[in-house]
Image (cartoon, rainbow, N blue to C red):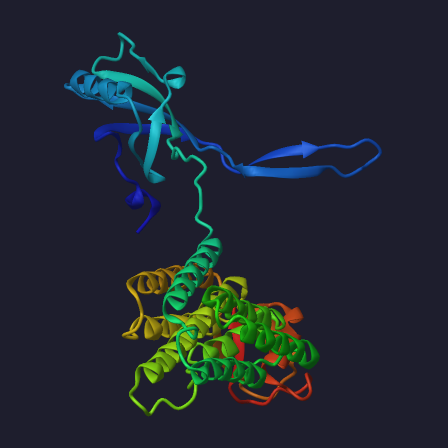
Length: 392
């Protein structure tokens, strides 16, 4: 198909015309900055040049006057319209009156010349606010902490029961301390001091459930704060499955039932504090690989779902868990859209990492990335086997 066959009949708002000639600008808008005592300027790119179209057209034939009237009405109509340009196809444009002229010559009956000037319509865009999904996640985590603390304070009680109920509650604090000591790979001395301080303060706050609950939430947050944000998620999700025993409750008496209620309340508060802190950790995390982001999303979402389905969860805590799941998944999904995927490649033969980096990405600087990700012993020799590389 030749260029003549690819030409389209010209029209504006569905009214046809015959193209005689046309011109339009192209290129970029730029501001040239010239400085004293400098030979080279700095050229600032200000964006693409606005597309303007000047068209010389004509109408011809016994009914040209009726066609002309229809074209004038189309040109005078307010707002953007569709211009079918013989060379450039369909365009949304506005007709400019300053450059549009219609001319007749008495010696040329049944014929008129039309000069039309159009400018691309573009779109009216105002600055748009964007929701900060990280802040939403942190706010939802705070709401879960508040709901969980209120539930704990309404359930936990050692004041009206025998001493063994209080002793069992002290044992819960010890269990939590041991669980965190085993699971959190933080600085040993700092973590040991933190846990020792918690057990001491928890023992003294058993008769004040609100203070005890704040101590538990503070411990979870402080222990997580001793670790890098990327290392927090795993131990926090493990802590999100914590279930303290609180001692034996095999006798069905009011005191033993209170002891069991205290254990459930303490364990539930701990799990929800850990899940809230895990959600905050995801808001601080940056991922190099898409699979890591999707894994974090699945794990935190699953942990929050599991906790929300427990029968002892109150309505307000259920709503807080559900809201936190929604905001966390939305935040990770939004940020994961720009995270590169990991793909596998197989070199045809052993080669240096430098060569593979240039062959794949035309960027020799990504040699170290290939070597590190695949744990290559020597960058000068890549085996002819599957290697993982980032697709970006």
